[in-house]
Amino acid sequence: MIQTIPKFRKSLLSWYDEEQRSLPWRTTPNLYRTIVSEFMLQQTQVKTALPYFDQWMSRFPDFHTLAKADIEIVLKHWEGLGYYNRARNLHKLANQIIGLERLPNNPEEWKMLPGIGDYTASAIASIAQNFPSAVVDGNVVRVLARISNEKRRFSSNRQAVEFFRASAESIVDPERPGDTNQAMMELGATVCIKAATNCTICPVQSFCSAYKSGEPKALPNIVRPKRTKVFINRAILIRENTILLHKNPSNARRLSDHYELPNLDAFE
Image 1 (cartoon, rainbow, N blue to C red):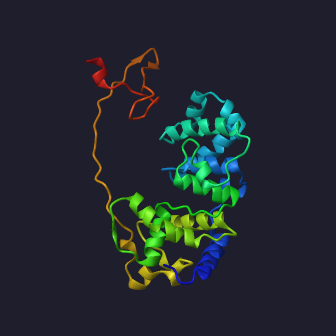
Image 2: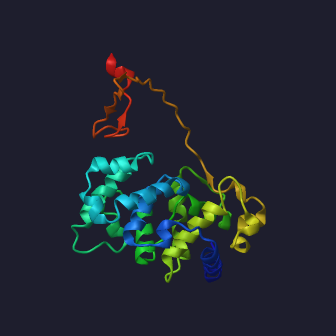
Image 3: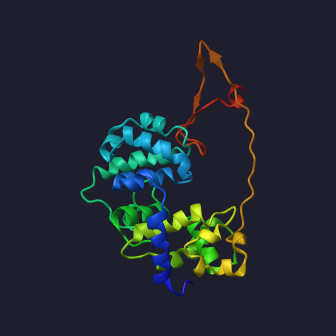
């Protein structure tokens, strides 16, 4: 895909060294902070996660503190981030880690622990442990699709991720795998963005085939699923300054163990 990968890496990493955003999990990195940040950034933007990260680290500064905390307290500190299974899995993960004789040190081992899939496993192993494994998310897919001017139609994000995985692996610098991954994601998040392109300030513009063709905004070509709206009637019952809430069962398909206003159907 990229004919001169060493030059591409050099341009990318030089830019990252100078222009990377100052983020708390980067300025004072360690394994725990990397894991917490990666869990928070699953389906959540950086700007949203930032205040939660600082609050979380103040209350749960390490694996042991988190593992010993009551799950209800953990969920309370996650409140507002959504997708609460991430918090439950993070709590389970901390309990498993403090009992391990040896920490996982590669993506395959990390994937055996709660809440960790391909993306998170590679992120943890490369960023915190310097393991050479590519992270492929929507930002990386967008950069690679434009660099290669790949116009094929993908039926889903997952299909696009799998298609570009080999290309992403070829780019990873074995000496700086974590920085390479973060640089690719940073490029997609701040320069090679979805809604537009900032080609004039792109550090790898000279390698970009879509830029040369004049059609970078059209890529990647991913078919987005149609969204279905669901309307639910809720009841607000207040008595003596107390609001009635319903807790969903643990096996609920939607928002398990989550407190919410009761559905009107419950009163039929």
